[in-house]
Length: 72
Image (cartoon, rainbow, N blue to C red; front, side, top):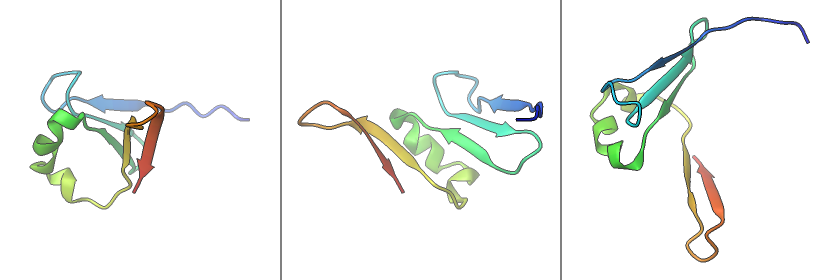
């Protein structure tokens, strides 16, 4: 595997590292946005909420407490 250095840029829109976080490889057009459940309403007011994308919801199975993920 050849080495290909890359830079990942992390942006904190509110300045809070526990809030909404965006990450991007500076030479690509893809972006990851991490949204804590308690900040979902804040995210929905952001322009990025209207972009096309894939989302992943993480949680626990209510009956077994096993970790779960839903991809949509």
